[in-house]
Amino acid sequence: MPSRNEIFKQGSIFHIYNRGCNRNKIFFEENNYIYLLQKIKHFTSEFKISVIAYCLMPNHYHLLLRQNSEKPLNKCIQFIFNGYSKAINKKYNRSGTLFQGKFKSVEVDEGESLKVCRYIHRNPLDDRLVDKLENWKFSNYLEWIGKRNGELYDKDFVKKHFSKPELYEKFVLDYFSDKQAANELRKYIKLFKKEVNTDL
Image (cartoon, rainbow, N blue to C red):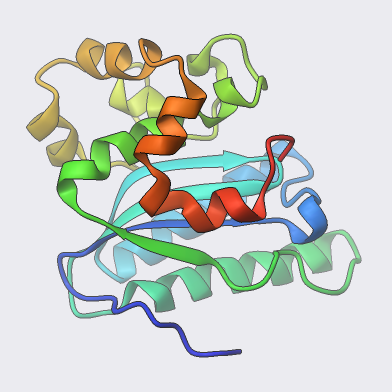
């Protein structure tokens, strides 16, 4: 596998994403989502990484993570998804790669991080998987808006930027233009948008 060009350093925030090989599913039943979230919780705790935002979709995923120690974030991601791929192959008696190559990563400065969170959390709505965003269980949007008591999110980060959960809900739901969102985030998601089309 070729070496990565990114420098994963303490304090950096990265948008991490990938999709299924040939746009195929990476989750086949609800327990798959739960299993992956357990692995994310375990390894991000071990590597001292904060999960700011996440969204797991049927054939791709998005994570916004902050590296809080000298332990490199990319190693954590490798442990999570290599283990997940092996477990899925064993469970469903399949072989070959599950993901479309190595995961993609783009460093995000904190000033742009909220736009990335909004982009990540809006995925199920923009892809028409749900009519109401809060109906998608496999993201931490519900934690952000105070409607679920999960642990897989950075409470201090949320409180720093939004004094009330309803303010983030408004920030996300009042934003309807996918084209405008793509333009604003182009430098962060250019590679992702280039590789996946709108029917992802």
